[in-house]
Image 1 (cartoon, one colour):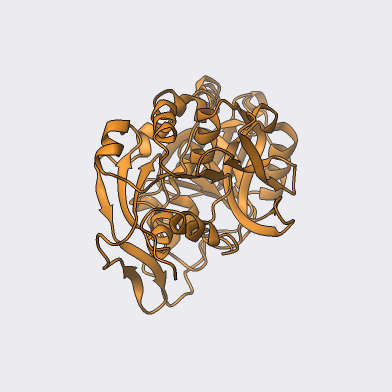
Image 2 (cartoon, helix red, strand yellow; image 1 turned 90 degrees about the vertical axis):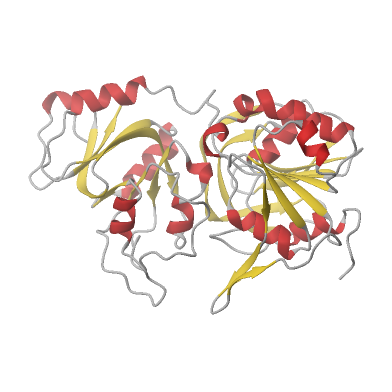
Length: 392
């Protein structure tokens, strides 16, 4: 890293990552021109970069990919988890090469440019990852200028002024704005997305969208549910008016305590009405807050598709996909909430279940995209436990 006081932009550098203290990492920019400020994190997945970039849980974040060959299969119209990318940008080791995949529609660097997202290549991503692991996730600015003109002091000031994710409600920014019926099922190669052609006979799940990945809804459909999606700010009266058999709480970005200001009272009313609940990631944290637990900001967070989680009921280990920087503090769980899953990386809580309600949640992403399918069973567990469910 170069110090801002003695910094000289290296010849050929067209991109830079600037820290709040004025230190900087130079490389070759790609994608959109400009700059963006956010939290720097790392993701250890070796596939699925398009799904990762479009995961709304990455709002406010810049992703360091530890796998060096990002962009080599291009992009397509299917591997997206939202209508647009929510990650602010990404940092990669190798330059983005020409795509080599029969499903490619557009090169990754062009896709990044069209979507207004900034990329930085030719960077020692291993060093960045070690820095995050040792010092925590820093606030940074990523910038791209084809002429290499960077005002490092101004960019450092922007990074220093950014308040960080703690205390920030981002679900309000990424949620869908209207109620909608979800119909797509799981995608399969050569066939596209299956469609939910069943009607009223299916149990009705109302999914509250705090920044959901599309594959969550697809898995609910595959499990046998009829799914209606509501915005993050939906009231209990709006939920109740749809006469749900169950309520799903989605993943999403930002600080759960901030989102909880409006989400927790609704969840508490759902629980009081004895409506079954299933939560994922941010939804897991919000369920924890709703029953009186606390959430904490993690040192580096969990982001990748290879995280081992132990199921405490029988000791089975699931390899899971994760993306979160906050966690439920297991020591604050009330007597009616028990821990069901634990991370084998750091022992943090990865699941809870209420003993007096039909309500459970997991910190990880059982829908994957990208990632293994070890935890798909959770969708079936939820749907099979609802009124009107038909045994397979």
